[in-house]
Image 1 (cartoon, rainbow, N blue to C red):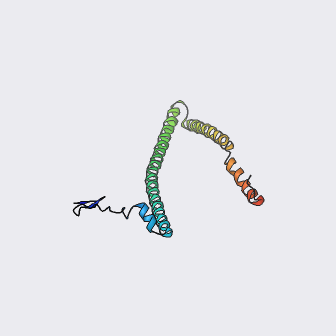
Image 2 (image 1 turned 30 degrees about the vertical axis):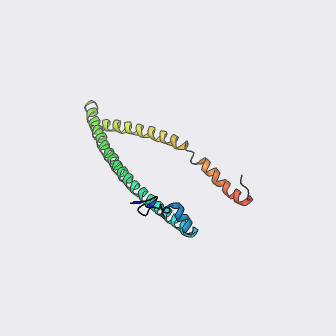
Image 3 (image 1 turned 90 degrees about the horizontal axis):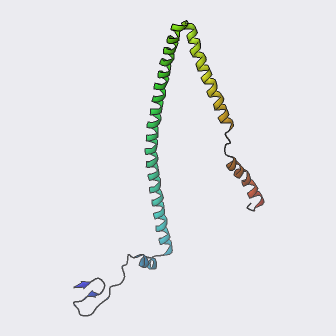
Length: 153
């Protein structure tokens, strides 16, 4: 009977079996530092390739979902535009019963003009408040000074 730790017992004496030649300690003792570093480099390279492939797959899946969502928003915008168009026509004709159709069209156009003016002024105000990237711009301005003086600030 053979015991993996004690050897063959049939001969009466216990012969210890050496450590597993594939264990990390044995490999480190038997292989050169260069081959171990080469293997680590290959493993890291393989890991990085696998991570990049995973990121590509996730990005493709996310982009597909985002594209579908954007398409749905586009469809909703077209449907909303037509709803607004037909409601505008209904308002025009409805007002046409109270006043002339020509004047009712002018009233609807003025209503849209006021809405457009309000949206324009609100958008302009919002854009004036955009600061951009002030901290990043400040950091980028400091980079040439750091290299010029040779001392970190």
